Amino acid sequence: MTTFDSTKRSLPELLKDITTGKIQLPDFQRGWVWDDDHVQSLLVSIARSFPVGAVMLMETGGEVRFETRPVEGIDPDKVTKSPDQLILDGQQRLTSLTQAVGLDAPVNTRTSKGKPIKRHYYFDIRTALEGEDRLEDAVIAVDEHRQTRKNFGRDVDIDLSTRQLECEQLYFPCDKLLSPNDWAGDLFKYNKDEIGTYFQFQEKIISAFSAYQLPVIELKKETSKEAVCLVFEKVNTGGVQLSVFELITASYAAEGYNLRDDWFGSDIRKVASRKARFEAHELLQDVQSTDLLQAITLLHTRERKLDDLRAGKTGKQVRPVSAKRASVLDLPLEAYRRWADAVERGFIEASYFLKGECFYSRRELPYATQLVPLAAVMTLLGKRWREPRIHAKLSRWFWSGVLGELYGGAVETRIALDLEELMNWFEDDAELPRTVIDASFDPTRLESLRSRNSAAYKGINVLILREGAEDFFWKGDIQYLDNQGVELDIHHIFPRAWCQAQGLSYRVYDSIINKTPISARTNRMIGGDAPSAYLARLQGHQQVQLDDGAMNAILEGHRIPAETLRADDFDAFYQQRKRRLLEIIEKAMGKKALVGSEPA
Image (cartoon, rainbow, N blue to C red; front, top):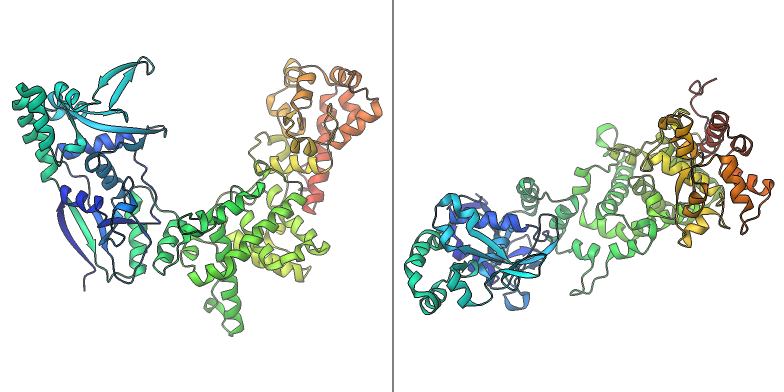
């Protein structure tokens, strides 16, 4: 038995069904995203009777049930609550045509750069009749007042704010293309000499819209939910591809559960937003819906593997722990409902752990991907992660991932291994996780770390901060000042200008070895002078008044060798600070740097 029909439907018929609500959208569908240029191009294509692609609709009333919403721009209170069909593919085109042709209100679109704008669309009748190659110039967009402006908005260029002005200038509104008679009557009243011109326009352009046929694939209501989800994944590859979250939303909606409401919240249905609860925590503000789904999938597949082992299964009979896309898409609704709240708490516990490691701002986090296994582990551990023995292992694993730079790129396999191996390690000291084993740090890496976007760069900076590094000028450690809103950044210890004057390569002086977090005020006082000069100036400032011992203690907090800094000996400073940074790196990772990579 076939699950679909292929047919054609006229544009006026489709738009009528959309504006009355007989055709609507599944509520999980993305919003309309087309910009002004796309809308104008679509209108030109219809006017030229060019194909604009097929649309796909699905009958309602079958096994697959969705929350629905009207096409954007249509008042949900003025249409039926029980649509006959839902748009599976073609939303962008149908919404564009509905707003530009089927409704009187201005189209809520955007510029090519994403700025929201309101537009009405018109055909310049005279230009449209000059030939098909002029149709692109014939379509114009005006603002919500039906005007265009020039001279930075001070002067009106085109004014179509009344029907009389439209008729006098021969600009035909696109929202009258499917019901042009009233406009034609007004043209006879205001500009009857151009009736002949209008009839030519009607025959060429208006008839193209009224006669336009769109190919339609109609899925029958008997179509299974698995097939519907597969359709969503396949048909959207040519447009805005659906994310894992949207595909799972489609699957869960078929079972009567609104995942979109759970994540974003809904005032209408009085559902609190899980996303908003994450955003209440500074370190979790960038957590995505897919991160939550991936962490839940880890726990679901781990539990499934344990069930297989308890059942005596072996080899390939045992289903693996997985965080891969296919596994996330297979996540059952029952598993999501069971784990979602617990995993949310796991993410929150992960943020507490990270604060303990001296991460306070999300911009400091080296890897967003490492949050997923961390949250999954926290979900299983509960409060146990605070036990000293477990905490020490968790910290070593975390810093191994950061400083070993192991969580960049595709990490689904590592994520799954880390969950299993960390839980085993907590119970058996001999079962080191692969990430702890694989992690290594080459001392020469310090010389190439220049980008603050690098995970290792961020990690080393935080390691310096958690040693209690204080500012050279302001009273207080750097993180204390950061929490108070003091302007801070990572600046050169030997200033750039001084290094350049000495003929040093930027590859040397611009590495993390010659950088440390200090306040903007301190950096301005440092200027481009030699360290011996700026230290004397800082210490002697009337609001500072520090002796050498006190300033040396501050420098040591940054792992800066005071003696070589005061002597303006860059080479000696460079090697000494490199060794001191290696000490805190090795402490965090619980292992020595690579043997043989350090110069003699």
